[in-house]
Amino acid sequence: MFGNRATTRNAVIFISGEAFWGFNSSLIASSTVLAVLLSELGASDRVIGSIGAIEAGLMVLPQIIGMYFFSSRKNRKRNLIIWHLVVMIPFLFISGGLILFENSFPASILKWALLTSYACFMGSIGMIAGVWMDWLAHLFEEKIRGTLMGVAFFASALLGTAGGLAAGLIIKAVEGHAAYAILYIAAGVFASISILTFTFVDDPADSSEAVLPKRITPADIIYSFRESLKDANFKSFLICRILASFGFCIIPFIAIYFKSTEGGSLSNSVIVACGAALTLGAAISNLLLGRLGDKYGHRLGVIVGTAMQVITLAILLAGSGQTFCAIIYFCIGICASSAFISHTNMLLESCPHEFRIAHLTVGNLIMSIPLIPAPFVAGLLAESFGLRTIFIICLMFSTASFAWCVFLVKEPRYLRVIDVQRRK
Image (tube, rainbow, N blue to C red; front, side, top):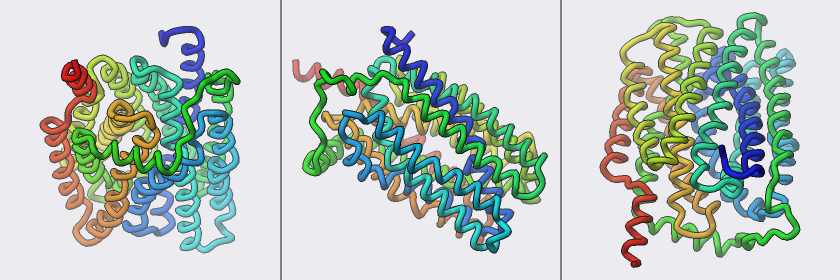
């Protein structure tokens, strides 16, 4: 399916590892589990809004450091696995331990300790996020990359659906906050299983005969950033993604909305279970967008994602209750799939130079910096004007993003064809 035997073997391993990671991620989903837990500990809308700010900032800002320290292809697989096991995953166990011994801390300290642990976890992911995608791009050719990512993250989201449902059942079955401790510790175990799966990947760069590109230097980074930012279509794509991200900076507030009387007064376990629909939506769209992107170009997936944002926010403003909650999270999953599968492949395919990791990093960096304050601002607006007001504002940003992508962003593959024709 994915070419020769070695490529197919790597693809199966990659799909399996991502599937386990999807299960662990859904056990502790920030948009539902963490948001609900912080709300129970008395966190304000501004504090809950910081979840989005942490994700926007710490998933991206550390990439510029990771890009340099993990830039060598030699032993990259080993270094990435060690980073996960020694630095990243322990924060899941720390969060579980904090909840397990919550009686030793005042609630006000516990919520900040959990938020700090989450920030450290996201920062450690950010350190290697660009490196991981560059490693994936190095292992698999462009013609199958989108399809492989689609299948891998389909499996991830499918097991994530099971993880979300399991989280809802555990919260319902176990009294008090002990349920959340169980979820974080279980997430740490499954995350470890996931990353150990990647030890079986056959990386050609680990061969002693491999001819590898030179290690990236600070001068290369600066040069690459400049070359990337000269590309008009790349800049237009980033504006589209920034508008889209502004339009969806309120995801943690959706759980709070459905907990409220206006949203239907749903219980924590019901909201977390409905949140499993997010991964189901992502599973279906991952499979479709990855394949369609390889065939017709990944700009199509970006258009689908921004259109779905508009639809999601319109539905959110139209109703309340359990059914609407499940529908909303299902739609969010489709948007999330586009924001990852289509977005990442657009970045990979629009790279105008040999240092792909630098191109990934500068794109994600520019996109994230304006978004760091957005969830805080959304929290302030929510406290002052109510959640529906920020939903309307986000609908406006999402509509602008959709229009921008349709009319101003071009397919990188089409531009490459035009460039080749001009050279001839």
